[in-house]
Image (cartoon, rainbow, N blue to C red; front, side, top):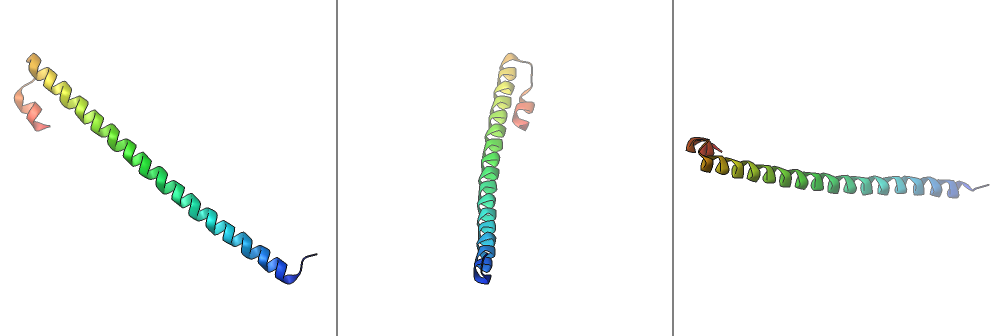
Length: 72
């Protein structure tokens, strides 16, 4: 059987662990969101470059006017 102080200490320890785990999960979520944002930005940049390259190719082929290329 546990004494009153042991029960209080066990409850405090449980609450401290809960708070620490919550902080750790928040940090992990923050890092995951930052990575996802970085990945999305890289993908968007790659898509913009691919689109611009395609437009230049079409312009060189004579299928697209100069204004369409300059609009982007």
